[in-house]
Length: 481
Ligand code: ADP
Image (cartoon, rainbow, N blue to C red):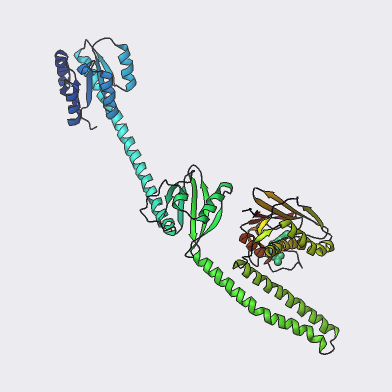
């Protein structure tokens, strides 16, 4: 309220009015008088008094209620209560609600002048402080608003989709990129609605379900028109969950082209390789060869065989990635494991490895392609045999848990350096500590990963350098219809 020299008297006693008029005029205050509550309200609306004096029992009402109401609306306005009788209770309550002071009858003119002056001075002081505080708070609020506006603009303009959910999976924010991705209009009113109701996409559903047990889940969201988004969930303390999505359609296209290229080249390489091997095999039939020539032929055969196995692996990988393995049946993993071990038995004995099988009875079957699942086991157990030094130990464990089959293949081989672990499932990747003389193309685990993906499973490695590795595969069990 601006500083003013008007004192508003809510008073209906003529004698007292005259006394106040004299006292206040003497110190150059203007006086306005309200004889009832309506006039008081009108005076407050039309003027900005520097102080209001309310007499006890004004207009037959409760003076404290009138004062309280005034202070609620004008917190810095000094209000005095004029007490007409001894009322300690009123004084206590008046101070409690923030009244500046009380005047007591009988009144002396000096007393009026002094109390009014003091109350106005005090209010001016408080008013100045309040104005400074309000200015400071407004400036800092404005700064916050500008920062929030900037953040809004950034979230609105970034190319990545952003969705923020509250702890109950209701939509708090969805930026234009995310709206575009899911075909929503900019002005669709979806805030506060459950995400499953608004964005009904199975891949997003899987991702959100996974976020319950996994702190940073990741999934690809594939749309019918071929677009692919790489989506990641991040929990946000006290808010909920952020889903960020990046369009990786072009990367997927490049990957597909690359795979097609590799597949074609591998295919074209196979026939000449078969021809080379065939002719090399014929060499000693067309005439005598000496020992050195025989050794050279052996080396040629070994090299051609390792190129052939690389080409075969590439072709296999191409087939698995292209999803040609539609054949699905109920597969008892335990049975396949026993077949795989029969084949690998020779290698296990040759290296004097200690094999432990922890496979309980009645493990539920999985649904999938038995040839691919066998390939997965061959690769994982084959690696354990290949990388574990002679006399080492391999443990294979299968257990059924919550509609999942968990397979663990552990060894006490060289382990995998932490920096290599995130990459070992990539094509052609070999860890930096592969022991000398241990051959390989770096394709085995890429094949395993593709097979596991095709069976809607998960695979990961836990490994300690120098102590060994455990590969864990989780596959969904076959559910009876
Ligand atoms: P490779 O043909 O080289 O064996 P893989 O794709 O099967 O290729 O494995 C990738 C890499 O992962 C290997 O080169 C090796 O560095 C590491 N690796 C896989 N299995 C094991 C294991 N059981 N122990 C130690 N390292 C392993």
